[in-house]
Image (cartoon, rainbow, N blue to C red; front, side, top):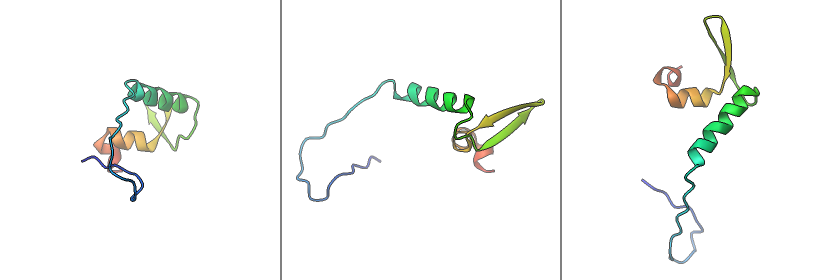
Length: 69
């Protein structure tokens, strides 16, 4: 379901749809860069003795296990 947000008093008119084909890749690249730099990381995960900083919201969105934690 798509929600269009605008001024309630705006008269009906044509709808402009904007597409950013590289948006997904850009978001993932920026989140990874932030993780690598330790920016906005809110948890640490230890795997076989190695500690990884992570974004809780990214893990929750990517895995039912982390979503339920």
